[in-house]
Length: 295
Image (cartoon, rainbow, N blue to C red; front, side, top):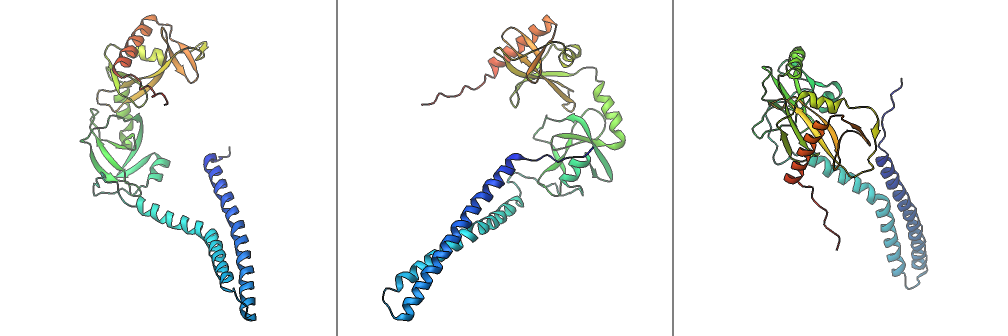
């Protein structure tokens, strides 16, 4: 199977637009250059013949020549100077950046391609758990060399060392099975309901069985031809390392497991009532901001 890299069509259209504008500017630049040469010829002719009013043609020659140069060279200088400014800005750390004084050898590209990095003579591999519960007292232990991003120590209950980088957890390669087994077989998990990017509300009386009822819902799907809103139900370990979520569609009187633009019935009235209760409580605590009417 041949791999075809994805193309950012927005970038392609933007580059095409810039190239078109620059082409138009070059055409105008050429027109101004021709005018400047015409006025230069008139100026030199009148000057050699000793005629009067030569100064105005000299001025017009200089003006159109300068305009031609600006239109042809100006955009190039703008790109070069702008690129230099951006490069300098990218080489400056953010004001709140804390350098741990230690750098790993792996670049951000290496980590993204290999899903691992090397630190203190150990290979740390990426776990399948997203890590969202950041705290202000997290300790940076190393810097990624080509970014102002750090690798952090993650406090956890597994008994193994876990590090965080760019929203993912990493553990030692020879401990991945033990760490995974620990988090996938906890006696209990914590459950939360929330909207994307907003506050979370803990669900106190929720079970693994109820969560998997949502995850495994299937059958005849229902479209979104009714009033509805979306929520996430997350399943987390008490230390916040293990973190998975699934989304639900909440209608005024029903709750569905969300599958994109389709919804699947839960076939569990008690579970639906519980989810409706927490969704309504969430909306009371964290109502959606209404758009201000245009004046």
